[in-house]
Image (cartoon, rainbow, N blue to C red):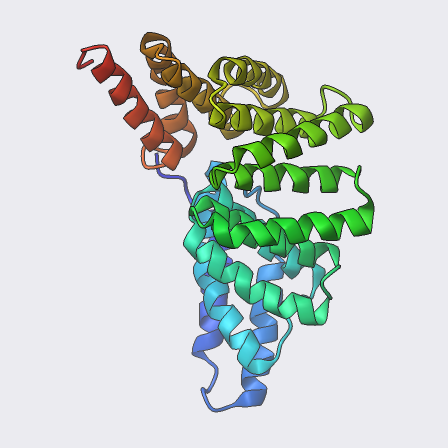
Length: 314
């Protein structure tokens, strides 16, 4: 399913292109003025939810504007850190790149933004920390967790120092580091971190809080990595029930946990149950984010693997 680009984004794209077409290449004052005008034009856009696949084509078009604009902003010494609405747009764009699994341009964008914000806002500014987090997330998403790990550790230290060890933002940072450790196959370290994080979440946030549920999911992944697939499956089923209540059955967050259930079932050799989960999951992923979405592709591959294990073609 092709999602339409938001008309406001289409108009802003056309306006920004027109601005740069009218600027003489050798006119520094003109370039500075045009850069500010283009930046402020994009900052005025309505807020689109980057976690909603329905906005992704709009953010894809915005990426082309932002990539070009950031290069010119640096040349003209126009800050990317202001106004606040432009900074918020850049953060939403980074969330889009992670959620849509379009990590490579997300890494490049995050690196450019972070370099500017560390100087202009400082390392401990809340939005600089978010930029570090988004860079780490995009690196993690493309499988580069060796580079992501020290960034996740840095975020955890920054948030612990700024907000305290038991603040929600700090606990989320601990979950993110745990996920990174799991991808690096350091499952024992991830398990220990997830256990401590879950204990803190339950103590300060309660058992039904979204961050507590995230910590439970990271703990399940650690247990799966340690070979405790049956315990991991039971935790994934619990997390899935929570996500159903929180987001609904067709949200990408809920579907991602269903993937974990299917994987755990495959690890346990229950290919028929895994096939049933993936057969239900595939059309949901395709409706939510399209046939080419990474979750759709993974589910399709798992479904084929289960069918082969069962000696079936369909």
